[in-house]
Image (cartoon, rainbow, N blue to C red; front, side, top):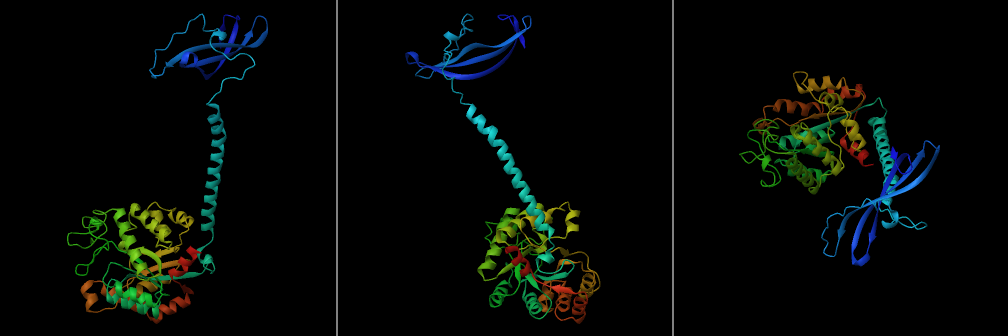
Amino acid sequence: MYWHETTGSYAIPFSFLWFCGDKAAGRRERRILAVYTVWTTDLSAGRCGVEPSVSSMSLMEMRGDKRVQEPKKADSATSTDASELSVPPAGEAPPRRPWRKPLRVALIGVPILGLLLLVCAVSILCVLVSRNRVPLTVRLGYKATDRLLIVNADDGAMCQPANDAIIQGMEKGMITSATLMVPCPGFPAMAEYARAHPDMDLGVHLTHTAEWKTHRWGPLLPADEVPGLIDPTGCMWPKVQGENGVYGHSNPSECRRESIAQIDKALTDGIDITHIDSHMGTMQYDLRYYLQYIRLALAYDVPLRMPSQDLLEKHGAGRLRFLLRGLGLVFPDHLIMGDKQGKTAKEHWLSVLSNLAPGVTEIYIHPAIAGDELRSITNSWRWRNGEYGAFLDDPDMRSLLQDKNIVLIGYRELRDLQRR
């Protein structure tokens, strides 16, 4: 508010701008007119009214050669004379205001966009909640209190003793699924078996390490495409972390490309892949690698091995299972890991399975038949042979499963549910 000397009253200015053109004498001229609508209040007379007051300043002149001229100084005598400043005569339409249309669009569009984003967010939240509300056992056609068990054989195709143990355990015993190491020497034999037995529950054991001293392998991709996965001997690194580990030399992108090559090789060779997991946990111990692991499961629409909820919470990823279920991935409720209980493989697994929780649980074993080949590869050959015997035809193991009403299932049921 200021004192208006012409009217002898206080005035409150409200201003707006428009552009007008003057094409006289072949000259283009742009002026900005500032039009003030002044609300005056005569305090002495007790009246109020609206008065227009106009001022202008020529900002620039642009001629044919588009040279910018110096701004003209407005004459004080004409600064308030509307008739000399090309103000639209009374009764004519006011000048066009190009800024009004985008402003209208913004005022209307922003709230609508915000509403759409809110609707999308609510919809996503509803999907997340709905996919986590129903227990996996119920989704599979069982009761919520039932105990379902997946016995997965890791390290398939590593060597012939492992292949023989897995085939016998799946055909005659209690092994319900297995994952194959595609870069390993025993893969061609397992691929041939899979083509002849398409109903077998087989996945891919994503392999980025070669841990044994005398029995080793390299990646499927050429060395120039995944140089970080290859150690000085031309094979994969023996460890995941440390000086001789994958994480110290490679990166998530290389591991993802090699994983894709392994999955595609298995599919090309006729294996109906039911799930994926990671050899020695290479794709699971680092979040950057874990994200690639999740991408693979989504891209190929297969279940993946997931740590149990308590382990995820320990590492600050307690909501990961909730989010991945919302993305449509299916995985067991529990994964049995940890220290070995008992002196033998049989004692260990009898102890674990006697306390099995309701829901779907996965245990992973490394069965192999003892012999000269297995002894030359690993010092863990006794344990591996013990797991082979425990889950082949051991009467105590079968009796425990029956007494505890534990139902054996494979990953194929989970994959079919995920793709349903």
